[in-house]
Image (cartoon, one colour):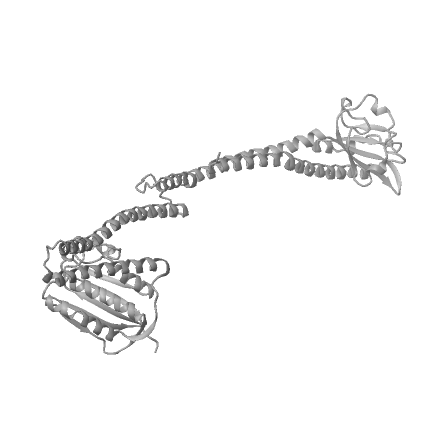
Length: 474
C-alpha cells in the first residue's frame, strides 16, 4: 500500500519526538549527573581542606586531640547539605556530624582496616558505602590532614548520592517541560504543513488524475498559494485549459480539413462523371477539364502546405540564408497579383525607404510569406479600395508592412488566425477557396528566421501585417 506524504510526515515527527525523549532521558541525564557530581566533589574537597587546615594547628599528634571538633565545622555541612566524618591517625572514626541511624551498628567504635589513603590520592573520592559504614550509596570525599609530612588524620565529607540524583532530576524535569513545550509549539509546523502543503498537493493530485482521464473541465483545483505549489497548480490549470483547447482544435481541424478536401474532390468527381455519361458535350471538355485541373492544383497545394507544416513542427523550415534586396522581391510579387487587382479595381501602393539596404534571409521563403500576405489582402479587400506595401528601416532590422482597407478581423479571432485551417465566419463567406493554412505557413517561416510578425486589425476598417528581417552586414 502506498504511504501518503502525511503518513511519512507523522512518522518523521514521532521519530523526532521519541529520539528527543531518549536523548533527554539518557544522554542529558547522565551529562547533568556527571556535571553535578564533579561540582559537588570539588566543593566538598575544598570544604574538607579548610577544616583540616584549621584543625592541624590545634593538635599535637592526631585529630582525636581536638577537644571540640564541632567548632571547626562552622555549620558548613548544613549549608552544603553534607556530613563530616573525622578519622584519627589510626583511621578510627571518632566524630561524625550526622545521625547514628545513617551509620552501621558500632561503626563509630571500629577501626577501618581496609581504608587506604593512596586509593584517594588522584581522584579524592569514591561512591559506595564507605567500607560498609553507611547503609546507602554515598559520595565520600577524603582529605588527608598533613603537616611536615606527618599525617594527623583524615577529613571525610559525605553526601548521599540521592541528593545529587534529586538535583539531577530537578534539572532534567526542566528539560522535559521545555521539550514538551517545544513539541507543542512544533505543532504549528504541522498545521502549516497541512494547510499550505498537504491539502494543496492533495488537490493537485486529484486534479492530475482527472486530467489524466481526459476530464479537462475539472474545477476541483482551487489552490491560491502564492508560492511554488501555487505555481504548480496554476501551471496544471493552464495545461488542462490548453489540452482542452487542443482537443477542440483537433476536432475543428479534422472538420476543416475534411471540408477543404471534400469540396474540390466533389467538383472533380462531378465533372468527370458528367464527361463520362455525356452530360457535357465534347466541345466543352477543355473548359471543364481546366476546372478539374484547377481543383487538382488546389489539392496539391493544400497537401504540400500540410506536408511542410508537419515537417517544420519537429525541425522547423529548412532555410538557405543569403543577402538580397527586399525591394526586388516586393516588385516581382506585386507583378504576380496585377491581374487579380485589376479585376477588383484595387490600387497597389508601394513605399520604399530612401536608403536601400539588403536583408539576410531565405529569399524563397520570404517570397512565399509576401505572396500569402498579399493573397489574403486582395481576397478580403473591398472592390475599389487600396493596398499599401511599405518597407522601412529601423535599427538593425528592416520591416515590411502589408496593409489593406477591407473587412478586418474580429478581435476574438486575432489570436487564432495563425492556427491551421482556422477561418473566421466572415472569411468563410468572402473566400470559399482558401485553404486556411497560409498564415500558419507565414508564422512558421518568420519564426524560423527568429523574427516577429504582428497584426493590427479593426473590424470593418482593415488589417495590417508587419514582419521584421535582419539587415545584411554587407
